[in-house]
Length: 438
Image 1: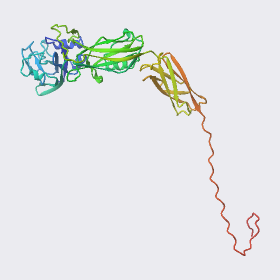
Image 2 (image 1 turned 180 degrees about the vertical axis):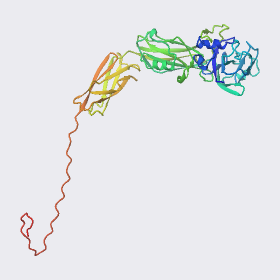
Image 3 (image 1 turned 90 degrees about the vertical axis):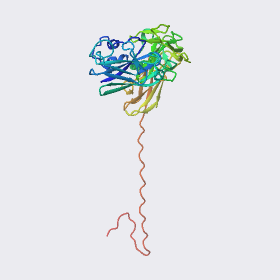
Image 4 (image 1 turned 30 degrees about the horizontal axis):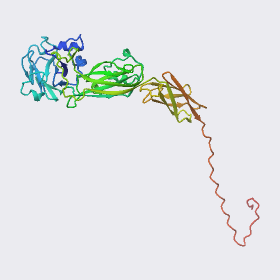
């Protein structure tokens, strides 16, 4: 065996062939299939919903020996093809994929795992085996064995919203506000002043984050802000965790904006289409009837573009020797005096007489900062031009004169040695200022 992966699928009452599953990720898929062929639809964090979930287990094999699947939670459903349910399933037919499509040689065995409620509710061990919690599927072929961990989760019970930022800027419309689908796309959206991201996590009664739930998004004023999509699903978002991200864009007017997310009874079919819980047999989605909270709200301040700059330099003057630097800060506000949204670009230009590092800085809490280093031998000072949007201001960093050198004080000369007095009665020559002569 080369690998084992799960694929979470909902609302299916017939087994899909492996070829049909692969076609959802790539309509041109052909055997032999590899795990990467299914990456686009493997976004569920290995979860099995205890009420209405299904989980395909795909085992990639290299020969035709029988393959044995065994699970510690849930049941393998074989009613459509084989007539029974149990915690063990052996695939030993001529169609070694056990998916019923009659195609040999695609190198993948497909098992179909269900919770108790979706399979046989009178099975003796069913209630215990489908309670929320961890589960493991073990796959064995000959002497080789692999295992795959998954989680049985309950139905949506509560909702958490996390606002990545607390303000956005006006300037976009529906055409300029697409929904991101990758972690890189979400990061880029957060980096723009006119956009931000609201993260939503759906929890079951045990507090486990649930994949496959759908959130309906609304704002209380489309003139102030809109969400890129009205409905988004909870998925495995990588380092962002398990949930869904709604891209929020500022539109025309400034002011307070409320964004509300609501859990709604939608389910995704394997073919990507959605169904709504209206009592139809083909869409048996169930919200937890005891859910205390199905919706949450977060508030944002919608501000305008840059309209005013306040520039400071610290220190305001320095010795211009090509090494000393001054920290130049720009506080950027809109026409109403509000700090602009994070992500506005501020440019620091120093022409000829010095250098700014970095030249372009994005605002954080309305402020952008760069370090300016004047060149050596600059006499008067260095002008710095600061630009944010259509607003431009300058500040002058003055150059100080070098302090003149002060001579070092000389140490006093030691006094001449004292001359000894001649002994009494000695005859001495007169003091002429010259040494004695013989």
